[in-house]
Length: 281
Image 1 (spheres, one colour):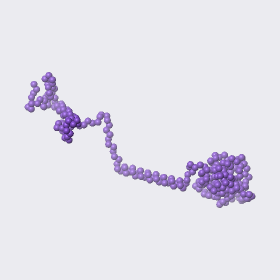
Image 2 (cartoon, helix red, strand yellow; image 1 turned 45 degrees about the horizontal axis):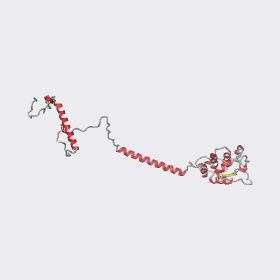
Image 3 (cartoon, one colour; image 1 turned 60 degrees about the vertical axis):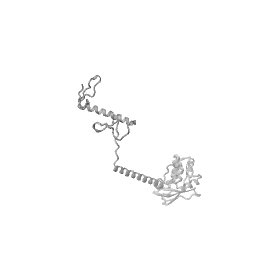
Image 4 (cartoon, one colour; image 1 turned 120 degrees about the vertical axis):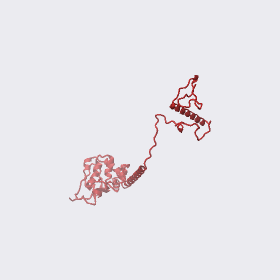
């Protein structure tokens, strides 16, 4: 028979049997650590039963823990995340000084962009772009590139000879129109086309080119009549020359403009009788 304790309960101390086995065989004896683990396991089972009953409404909900005392004074800790599952760390906050610096940089970028946009708008108003315009529309505006670029001849005789040269040579049509019409002011373009029987300069140039039958004598017909070049206006008459191989283009009045260039500012048909050419060396 099992040994009886003073309190009459078997197995209440370490080293005693927990309960007899079936058939009257005594259970294995437990040491102190095994007994503590067994008691803790029993308490955990009681806590689970109490919690389940409370969820099902069998036990009134209370803020206090069940009467069962747990080993160590605390209920079992809830289970952690499953093995292998990553736990995301909280995202660190950006330092305040760095946020202020980013805000200032963004403000400066916006200011620079606004300045660039304003400068671009101002530049386009002062120097309009010819992008998107066809040749006829562009030359009707007179071009105006000679005001800031060296695009015209610096010799009045050469400026008129270039008109015959461009109309006579096989340039691309658009290039031919630009070279001829942009060497004239807007008023001279209109006079040139009207005097030769065309609605505008862009229409006159290809039509005159179609009338050229012999390129060489035509493009070399005009030559200087005097080495003395006036510093104001000069009129060069086609009737001074023996124009062969193409149409006679009339009289051109030229004026010296920016950078010593000569711009054709007027046109008329050749007068009759033809005035005497200038002389002098």
